Length: 479
Image 1: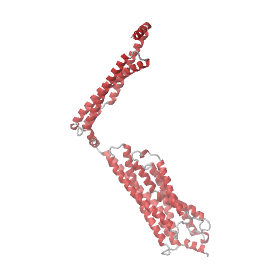
Image 2: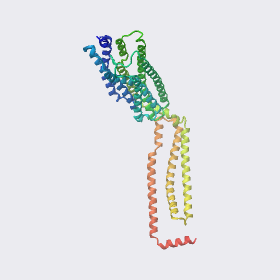
Image 3: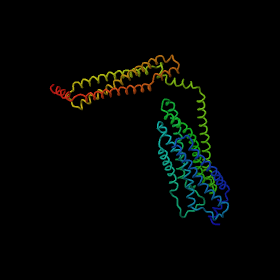
Image 4: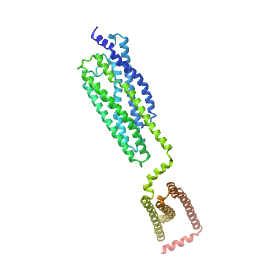
């Protein structure tokens, strides 16, 4: 038996290697339907669409990894059980293609936490507008995700050769060349720990801003609540990822360092490597834990909503009363009084100013009898417009003086009134729809009256003889 057959015989007869392959293959068959179920449920979750895009890529990475492992481990187990050791040497091209699936999926899952951290940082920074943000942010994070995935793969596969290579088992990292694996493992662990710390900072920032945003618009408060719920889920995800990545990388580096020291046989070394890289189990556990966390948050939200439904409506009136009391009740009426006085002063000033403009235009019309037709037309138009606006200003002044006077009086007596009477009186006092209806009716009546007046003047001019105009023009010229 030659050396090739001897090496393959050792691998095929290794119980530990067969156990490692069978264990991972069984876990892959459980993980694949679980991951497809998680992908189908992801679209129904109340998460931002950019978060869903990145998590979809994470689940896709698990599926790609498990698919590559199913093919590799199935072929290896079949060869080890049914084929002759001398005829089971794997093809280098088969190893390259399916091990590439294996490693691409592995590094996609390892790199997910960084683009998630970027996306959540943007969501926290733009909490007022991120709710309606474009999917381009999620697509950009996915592009970054794949770039980060490609960097370690390019490093690992940089020295790959297809010709003259004997590979008894499909693997990339060998115990004699641990430097590349050490570099990738250490960098990945550092990134995981850094992102975990940043997730905690973002979570605290969103909690702090939520407490300060009680008077913010609904979109901002909704986004902050969504950020907090999402961060609770991603904190669990980051904890799980950090623990698994740190443990797996540490075990991996320890195995690389000690394999030669303990003189591990090739089949034992491969078995330990496959058991250490038990990513299908990691995928199953991730889906299970995140599902429980999402269910817990959903039950908490439903419980809060049920409590709100069962709460006495008067509690909301009391809370609302406490919120607006500082600005609308007698405990601090100064703001309302100042606003009312300013509105009254502005109305009175505008009414006086319109009267002044009307007098100026009347004086100019009586003085400029010899001016051009265009100038006199403009003066007539000014007088007509100012008369119209004078009526509008009079109506507006009367209404707003009355309304603000009532409002200021109401502020003084608000502390002695029940809340419901105060709110009802405030709403009745602010009858702006009635004000608008009355304004439109009176303005329409004035415009019709003015139009009738102009028509009568035009008819009178038509009926007047032309000699009257010539004599009038002669008197103007003689002056």
